[in-house]
Structures are given as structure tokens and as C-alpha cells.
Amino acid sequence: MTGEAGPGAGGAQAGPTGAAGAAGAAEAAEAHGLSGHELRLDPLTGEWVAIVARRQDRPNLPSGGCPFCVGGLEAPEPYTVRAFENRWPAFLPGPPAGAADRRTQGGFTWWPPRGAAEVVLYSPGHDGSLGTIGVEGVRAVVDLWAERTEALMGRPEIEYVLVFENRGEEVGATIDHPHGQIYAFPFVPPVPRREAAVAATDGCPLCRTVPHELAAGIRVVGRAGRWVSYVPFASGYPYGMLVAPEDHRPSLSDLDGAARDALATLLHDAVARYDRLFDRPMPYLLWVHPGVHLHVHLAPPMRAPGVQRFVASGEVGSGTLSNPVAPEAAAEALRRA
Ligand SMILES: [Zn+2]
Ligand SMILES: [Zn+2]
Ligand SMILES: [Zn+2]
Image (tube, rainbow, N blue to C red; front, side, top):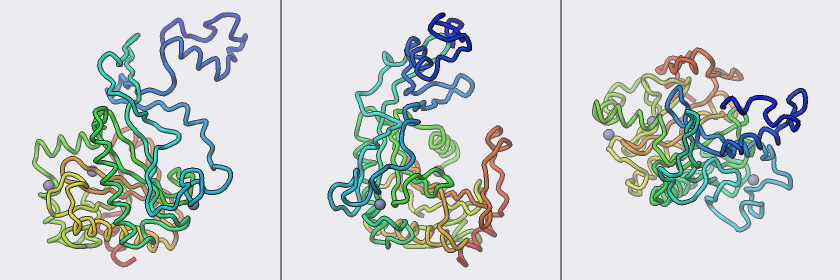
């Protein structure tokens, strides 16, 4: 903020204690060309941050029953799997934002949050998960992920599509009905960008390490066709897993039917194992990384039954994760689950 925007700017309008309230703050921001919904460049890291202030208005739990059950707000017609635009999107559709749309003022840079945000329903049944809807059910989800990724990547304003799921209230899921999400970004975000940079420098890391994982076997959890699920050598998360193909395939659209079946089999197996591991539905983060050599990350926020693992200051402040469970022990526990 510049000096003019300090407390009390606007004189008589803002009370003696500066209690202009949220509306006053929004007006003050608007005077600086800020809507509260934009991509802002962090001057410290050079990375974009999505400011989505309007999302604070969304209800935690929709009233009037589950919106994802057939007949609900977001699913008026019967379906098997279904994708639709998020009602509270972090990214908005629109023409590609060019240099003219990028604003720089007072040393700060911001940009319209161009892109897309969608919700993916995994099943019409309200209770269930990737671990209970059957391999065929998961295969239908994989097909929809592939279809939506391809459609979104075909739009000129979109540079990267991230399919993901937050499961469980521990990681902020507000609706139980089995579902995931998709964010379509107008840039390649830092994590996949970094993975691509490593591959560009050193060659594909999965082509190099998956054969070693299979040969050693000590971190392998499951196998299906030419796919494998395993706890990675340097897993940042207790019980974290990767699901990857032996063959170098950049995206979901590059997978034939057999490969999609194998991926579905291993996702189903992974979530079912998680739920058996601590004898309760395991909360987890899941995200799909297309780009170099397709893979799926799974990251539960738990370190033991009933014990949550927080990514806290030492890790957030350094960018170096510390994992209290040895990957080999995690793999053994997951194989037994
Ligand atoms: Zn439901
Ligand atoms: Zn590869
Ligand atoms: Zn990755």
C-alpha cells in the first residue's frame, strides 16, 4: 500500500478509531484498482498468489440437503460422474489476459485471475470414496479427469490444469459427498514448474527411479499392469504415496484403456488401504501432475491414529519438509493394511 492509503485516509469517512469496517477497506482497495479477486505477485518470492476474498462469503455447509446428490443444487439430473463450474471459483473464465491486463503500481504487480475452477463428482452415492466406488467407478472418474483436462488445456488462456482432491474435514472439505476439484491456471505453477525444470536438467526422474523402486520393492505398495504405487524415497509426508506408470506418458489423455484401468485399480487400492490403516476414513490431499511423466501424489495429514501432522513453521519457513515416518516403514504398514 502507498502512503495515501494509510488509516484515516478519507478523513471524516473513517471514524476516529479507523473503524471503517470491511466495506471501507474494500472501497479503499478499489480506489487502488484492487477488487479482492486477483493474482498478486509476491515481491519477496516472485510467485503469484491468488487473492480470492469473495470466497469468505461462501457458506460452510449449504442448506437444503447435499448439493451433489441427484436432485440437489449442483446435480439436477441423474449422473454417473459429473463436472461443473465451481460456484465460488478461484479462477475465472475469460479471454487470455495479455500484457495490457497486467497492472503495476507502486512496485506491486497484479493480474486478472483468468482460468477455471471446476468440481468433479465421483459418484451419485452420497457415502463413499475412491476406495469404495469400485475400480469401474474410479475408471469413470479418471476418464472425466482426462476429458476435462484436455478441454481446459485447449483454451488459450490456460497453461496448466491441476486435478486434485481434499478429503476429510481435517483438510477443509466441507461436503462429504465424494468429489474432487480442478484448477486451470493461466501460468505453470511453481511445483510442477520445478518438477519440469529438474527433468529438463537431469532427465525424467520417474523413468530413472521407478525401475529401482520395482527392483528393490521395499517402498512398493501395489502393482497393476504397468503401474506402481509406492511411498517415495524422499516422501515429505508420512504415508505419502506416488502412483505412476513405468512408461513415460505426459498426460491422462496419453493413456489407453488398459493404462487407465491400472491407474484406477491403484487409486482404489491406495484409498482402501488408507482407510484400513488407522481403521477410519483417512483424510488426504491428492493431486495429479501431468507435464513430464504423469503421476498422482497422495498425502495424508496424519502421522499416527488420531495424531495429525501439521506442516508448521520449520517447514513452511524453510521449504524443507520433515517426515517423522520412514518411507520403508510406511510402505510396509500400507502393504499389510
Ligand atoms: Zn450427497
Ligand atoms: Zn519418464
Ligand atoms: Zn509431482
